Image: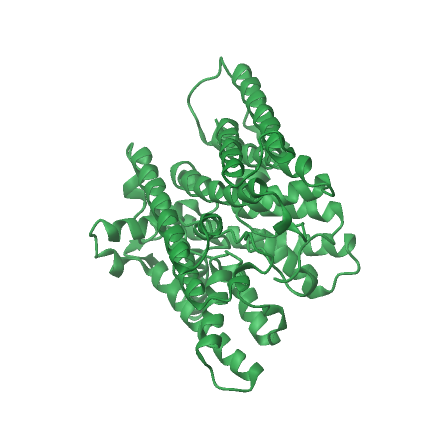
Length: 479
């Protein structure tokens, strides 16, 4: 089913190419036709192999399905790049495909803006499909699994579990898809009114709502030099980084959700504080008081990085080290649960901080019992434990990845090595220095690109659905 959907996406890219003057006999559209054939052939093979399989999907099958689907989709999604781009290597194609489907937004091509319109459209569409797939998968399937997903969708203050328990998963997923489509359409119209042409508006709307960050322009949003477009982008990036079901409830008239969802409060509070800090650091850098441009630039980059979109309205690699530290922290925190944003997620960070403070208090008052609550719901100790374990796993994987890449890429500085892991594992996109917003990942070794592609998938699927695939004893023990 995933492969058939991917074939359908390739078909849309052919239509986009035809509408933009490409000929069906041309190289790019022929490449997409071949990609459709590969996807449908593989779909038929898997369908044939599974014709006698049971229709029931348990935790074991769900983990395997999600992990393998993302890896397989990445490989199939790389085919158009291999067939269309002359200088494209296998590592470049897989990196770009993974970056698209995981909504990361890092690119391995320095001249991507010269691609045929159909291939540019595939870059954007892959992020839009990836963003939608992540939301639906996590809410509809992964809400009963580990990695703190139960906290993200069952115990969080937005009360998402009430929409997906007791046979209401399909209706809840439908609400999500309709909201996602509506938000994409509104963003596209806003961009068109703001000055983009239709092709630019459609592509940027898809990558904004998916918090992906792929652009059709070489300098991202900075290319347009339009304050209006940047403010439009800020609004829709923030909405895409907010818990979708929370916004859906507000639209349906449930205003009481404003008082219940503490994660949303923390999300916008962190954005406000970080934006203020960046405004002050920019004033220090420019040696003048903040003006409209510096305020807009600071807010834009804070929202873009925290929602893990990765757009740039300026080259923030030239900012003060203190400003870069703020951006690195925002990369790690990420967006809200149940959104297209990446990162650790705000709710996990809040729970981890509150757990640490509770532990400090219990160090001198060990007999005190103080239950932790999020949005009116008491959190179980097992749920809190799963959050702490998840964060520790992310940190360990990040540290191990830094050591590995430092060995493969000895010429990279510490900031380059650290930021490239941070940018891919947390699905941000740009890093710093030679991997910054004005640069790309083309200079890296093929092995590094393939490893970073795996990190993107790990980060987007929140570790477990991919990690279990590489742990044979789990499958043997519980066969």
